[in-house]
Image (cartoon, rainbow, N blue to C red; front, side, top):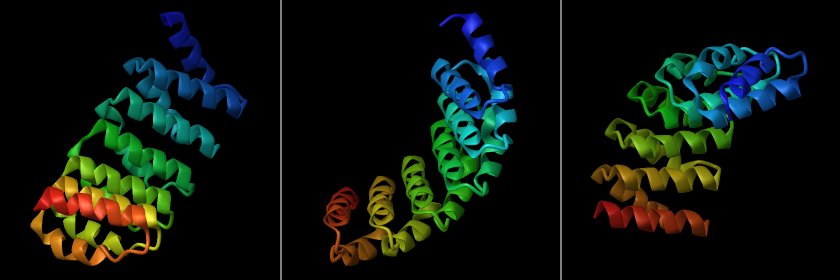
Length: 187
């Protein structure tokens, strides 16, 4: 795509039709051009949640640190899809400012958001997230438990060994498999 396409998609972010704004945000994420960061940041306040979701996704794909603070604020969006994409985007940008907000999002009401927060914390591998991840080994959603175990394995902190051993009794086979893998990494 050429410069004209970039400008066309930026202009379409202002269209009255939410579907066109969504598509434009998606296309700008695919282009990964930093020129789109400002207009995409504005779309994080769009009245349509789907546009906010695609704007967050696009900002993560672009990876510009100017988006960090606005994405952190979107972690409290009323729509879980927007919160999930904000977590994912912050994980792609990979700035340590997001670690504390990710730890907080482990308590989100939506399991997809909690799962994405666990995944992002695993990539950061920061030991201060270990107690919160250990707690998520008891989450009601098996995907959250699975990725909490995965993250604990990536971090490699010995404090997780006993809770992981207890999680070998988890009723879900995927959780048990991830727990086993995490224990191998830590030992």
